[in-house]
Amino acid sequence: MKISNFKLALAFPLSFPMVPSDFFFGCMSMERPQFVMLRAENGPIDAMRNNLVEDAIRHNCSHIMMMDCDMVYHPLTVPTLLAHKLPVVGALCYRRYPPFDPLMLQDPRLRATRASIIGKRENLLKLMQPEPAVFYSI
Image (cartoon, rainbow, N blue to C red):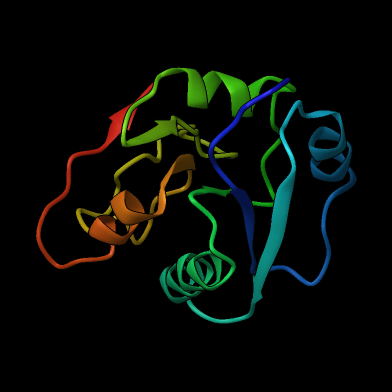
């Protein structure tokens, strides 16, 4: 896969003391360009995500993909999300236990969102602002 003109950050908000093997092997099989790996450990999920965005900016990354470690990712997740060529793209995720409802945008400020999102850093920074933001999903 050749994707040019950007620097990708794969960002891992780690709220568990270990990473499940399904997640690890799923990540290893994903098609993706060169990337910077960022992680945040311990604390509220919204604070960890915000810190990861700030870390990506410090690393001069143009795109950020948040990856929850309790999810399993399809090998084509990154190119599929990037192919939409939208400011921010997300993939709908479902709760792991009944009622298995969708979890995208549960909180109006995206604090409780459990999703894979990828986008340019300036657009993700807008999501951190207090005003409502537009969010695209696939």
